[in-house]
Length: 91
Image (cartoon, rainbow, N blue to C red; front, side):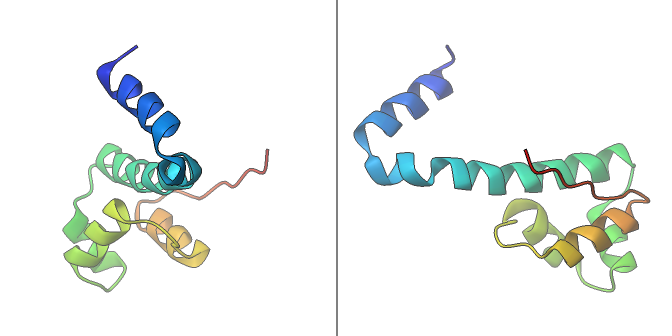
């Protein structure tokens, strides 16, 4: 088990608020990481995405780094700027 996994497991055992909110926070973080990875694999910069979405680079950075409560319409526009599509799944 990695040091990070050990830390997370210990923190979940000792901090009820952290344990309660961990899954939600991780999902929000994961969305931003997925967006950044999709952008990078497309060979597009944040600046280029910003131009396509008629916004500024800092807005794209916020989307990738703080994607909590991101709108589905924003996700779709972001994906379209990369020439990709969003697929949702309820499991």
